[in-house]
Length: 232
Ligand code: SF4
Image 1 (tube, protein in one colour):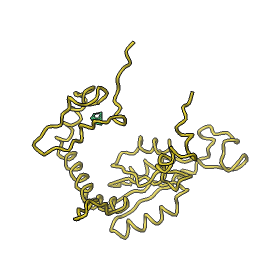
Image 2: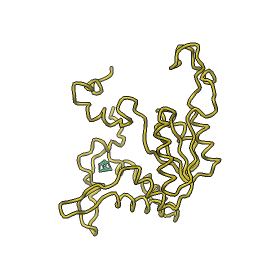
Image 3: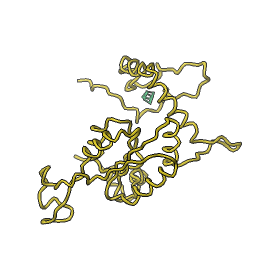
């Protein structure tokens, strides 16, 4: 039986969606691999692109691309990156004329949250922030057993509460919610329940200083080669 094709951009060597052509030339879509989403689901792509016909979506996308452009400088010796993500966040929020920002942070990054709060306030924003432990709800509420507590059996351990974090920011009418270091899964719930525009400043990586890509960069090394071994 023939294997069903599905999009696998990560394995594409043609990348005809990003060709080095002049502005009046057409990308050679025919040359794309069979697993290319442009070949497999053209109707889906056309419908999604039509979303940019909505003026507010088009404007938001335009501002995001202008921001992207401004993250580089073009020097005689070539293109160079110029600002870190936190400054990109500040510039973009100003571009969107956002006044009130909301930070949903992990208690493990409380220090970083305070610094971010200061930075954003110093740049003229009103900053609402909410810690993952908000609600002070014991982990027993979601069925965590004594032996599954990080502090150990017998301790009160309050749960990370991304749904409450999202609702607090929704109700606070923030213009933009910013995730700071939420755990995997907790971030998924936060995204699911957050009803305001949302972005991520940092994701949690307890080992690599919140830089999960470090593990990928080491995946070919003796230290993290286990990442590439096949699971049976
Ligand atoms: S969209 Fe098509 S051409 Fe572009 S990376 Fe994916 S598979 Fe390759």
